[in-house]
Image (tube, rainbow, N blue to C red; front, side, top):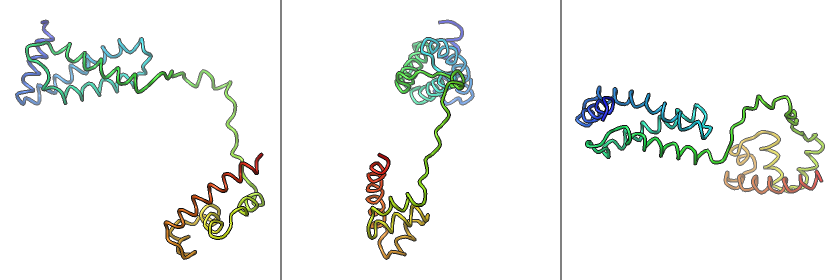
Length: 183
């Protein structure tokens, strides 16, 4: 066991005995060690710098939560490295097969964003005409006039639940009508 391992083991034992300053020193030293280990291992997996730091922080948290599993007869480094390896695997699983490519490399070749297509007042009225009765009144009050559920319910003498149902069904009918309208 080298000097660093001996010192870590002493700090870990002191921390287990309740020495908060030893625990702070241990975590500070381990954070530096972990950053180097995770950076070195992450290079082959193209993890971003933010991902490296996330793995380091998750590893430090796991060390804190699982410090009772450390065997005082064993070195601290390999135990910490195993936790870091598992946290790195977790990060890679979360990331999936995604590859990060800076958008700056393609900004000149990307098309301009399409402008939102707006319906004219006449088109809106024509589309709303597919709705009848309370559905028409509810959808128009909420989506066109900007009223809220409570005010619409009071104005139309309906329960708020009935207004929500009418709105949902009305919007579904409008979506279907819009698809037909645009074809």
